[in-house]
Figure (cartoon, one colour):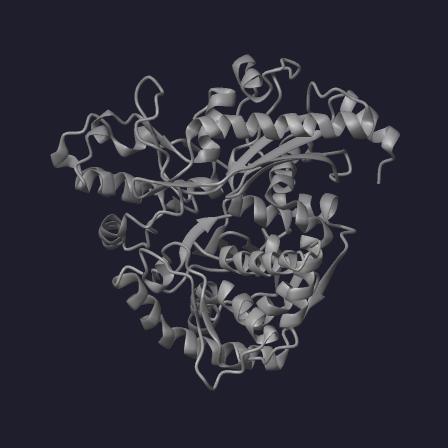
Length: 534
C-alpha cells in the first residue's frame, strides 16, 4: 500500500487512473494509484424520470452529473493530498447497460434516452427472438430500434447512430464511436468467435426491414466492438472541457473501451474467469455467470452477453431489487423520528437487516413483491409493490424484514434456477456487490440461500463498477504483452485481496424454496393489482 506522500506524487505525476460509472441512482468516480487501490472518489446523486410512459434521464442532466461528480472528485483529492487534478495515466467510462440513444447525421439526439428500465418493446423482443433463434431482451438497443420501426416512429428514417449511455459519453469525450464487448452485447448479439456483432443476424435484420426503405443498414448504426485492452481513443480538448469546465484537465489521456455496469461489476469482483460469477444488487439486480459452454437452447429469462474480454456470459437481469426494501426502512426512520429519536441510517439498516436473520427460514408465510416497475422474467410490464399475509402467517419484525430481503432476489432466483437446475451450470463461487451487501453477512447469506452457492464479498467490492472501469483503464496501459484480463486481475489486483466467503445454510436453502412456491402462486395477486389499476 502506498503512503499518502507516494499517492500525492502518483497523482501529481499523472500516473493515477480514473474510472467513472453512471449508475441508476449515483454517478461515481474512483481514482486508483499504482497499487490499483482506490485513493479518492467523487459522486453525484440522480434519479430516472418517468415521462410520457418512458423511463429516462435528461441528457443535460447526464453532463451536469458528470461535471458534478468530477468536481466532487477534484475536491476530495485536494482535501486529502493538496493536489490539483490535471491528468491521468488512463480514463474509463461505464454506465447502465442497454437502452436506446439514437442520433441523426448532425449528432443530435432524436428522442429522449430510453433506459434499461423500460418494458415497452415486447412485440419487437418476441419477433426478433424468433427471427434470430436467440433471446433478445426488451431492454436491448436492437429491440428498442425495431419497436420504433413497428410503431412507425418518424425519427427512425433519420437515425445514423445508436449507442448506449457509456458509448455516448465516450463518443463525446473522444470522438470515437466504439463500445466495449460487454456493453455491445447489450445492443446486438455478439459472435463469440469473431468478437463482433453476429453477421448472419445483422443480415437477417436488414432483410426484415428492407421493405421500409430506410437509408441505412444496421451495421452502419452500431458502434465498433472492442475488447478489454484495445485502444479506444483519447480525451480530446472538447472532451476535457465537457468533463472539467474549470479547464484544469488536459487532453490526450488514453481511454479504454467504454463498458456497461455488468462488465465492470465482473471486473471489480474478479469474476471474468469461467465457473465464476457475480451478483450486483442495488436498485436493480443482475447475476452474471461465465459459462464453460453455450446453453442448450434460448431462454427468455436469460441473456447471453460477454465479459469485457469477449467470453460468453449468462446474465439474469431484473428491474427491481432494493427500492421497496429501502422504502420500508425509510418508514421505520420516520416512525423513530416521530418519537424524537435521531436516526443513523447505517445503524438502522444494519439493525433491521440483522433482525431478518432471526426470522423463519420461509419468512413465516409472509409474501411480498418489490415491483416498482415491470419485471420481464415474471411477465409484468408494470409493477405494484405489495405486502401480503394470511391470518395464519407469523407476522413479526424479523419475518417482515426477511421477506423483503427474500423478495428482492425473487425474480433473480427464478432465472438462476434455470441455469443451475435445468442447464446444470457449475459455479465455484459467486461474488456479491452493491447496496444489498453493505450490512456484513446478511445479504450475502440471503443470496447464498437463494442460489445454493458459496458467496464471497470483498472489502473492495463496495467501490463497485467505478473501480471496475478504473481497472479496465489501468489494464489498457499497464498490461504486459500477452497478459489476459483474468491473469492481470489475479496477479496484479486480487493477489492479496481481503474478503469473506459464506457457504449456503441448508435451512435457508430449503426455506427459500418454500418461499418461492408461494411467490410463484402469489403472482396472480400482483397481476390483479396491475390489471385493476391500483
